[in-house]
Image (cartoon, rainbow, N blue to C red; front, side, top):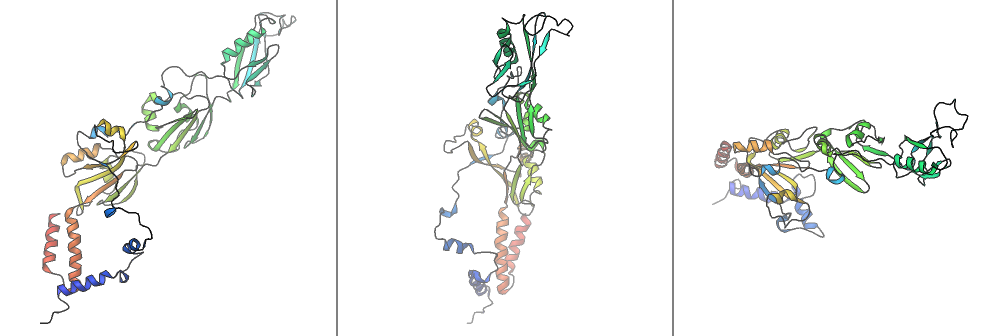
Length: 401
């Protein structure tokens, strides 16, 4: 009995033998098996598993409350609250001041006896700059320490030094230029500059306004305050919504506005895959799915929509989870929601996506079977024509989707 080479069994064998020789198949680069086989040194794990532990959290009414808002960062906790009066602004190196000296009557040290026709019983000294030693020079009082002291303290010191020579002297010190009392406002603002502080007190939003305001979307901008080696950062939106975070700035501070492009990545059985911008808004999980074009009806498994994220350790500890096996302040977490459940859509509406999240929609199990049937169908079609059994099975599976 002679076996035809066109029988399904022989045809399948011929095709498999052909496919085993990758040299004859079109390819845009090296064969992955060749890469693996020819490596001089290979660092891998069994089954190429990443080996990264993670926490799996199902989104439901009990877990959503822990993740319904991003963890807040605070300026108030680092630099004090916004309540109370503004900080004192002392004189400093480089400040330009004006010193006026009043005497009770003419005939004193500064007001001569023949000065009856002059307007007022005072003199004003020429403007002078506080030198690098922190001193001012006042006639008959000598060098007076000014840097690091308030105007009132300097006034009393000059009065004390002139007390034995002038007639009941009274001194007024006026700051012409606050060169030492400036705040640098940098980054994504319309007019980066140094802002001179006023004695009435200036807050973070005040100096940002003096610099022309933000040049980037508010929802994607963070504000950092640097002071004497300490740094704290807060989202601009949080600064607007919480007046207590709008703290007073101090001389020498640096305020930096930084645009952080917020994106998430979508993979899997969505209509579109890729990286998507939040733009000038916040996005829920439902928004993110819509931005990625929604799930493919013929491919997606709505019961297995997941979000990958690095979560603050303290949030999981508040959930009473034992995260002692994880190291560091961030813990990998996979959030899972079931959109076959009608209530799952409310969970997707409430759960907020975060910057750098990965959104993955799994394939339905029937899709994997269809892939296999399509390969089997192609092989048997090449050998001896499409078999009715494969076609019938594939159509049955398609009918289930």
